[in-house]
Image (cartoon, rainbow, N blue to C red; front, side, top):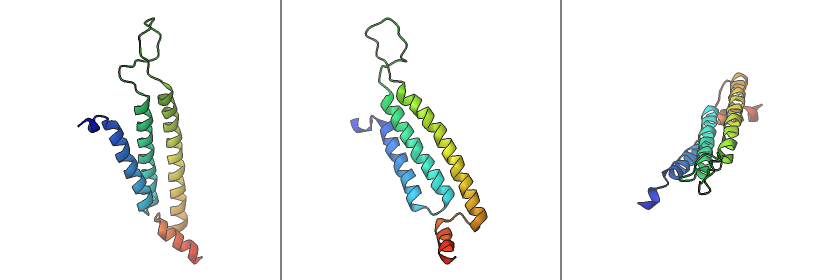
Length: 118
C-alpha cells in the first residue's frame, strides 16, 4: 500500500480530472466556471504539496546547522494564484450574467445556435 502514501497527489489527480471533465463535458457556462475553479484548486494543492518537506520548518534562522527548511516560494505563489483565481471567477461570472441578459440562456450550444441563426 505504499502507492497510497502520497494521498494528496491522488486527491490532486482526482480533482484535476473532475475539473477537466466539467469544463469539457458540460454545456452550462456556470458549471464550466465551477469546473475551472476545481481545476485551479487541484493545481494549487499540487504546488503546495510539492513545496512541503517532511521534517522541514519555516525558514527562520535558528543557529542550528542541521535544520531543514521548507521553501516558502510555492506557498507565496499560490496565494497570488488564489487572488488571481477569485478575480478571474468574478469576471467569468459577470460575463455569464451578460450572456444570459443578451441571449436568455447560459447553455453554450443554445448561444452558438442563436449566433448562427442571426
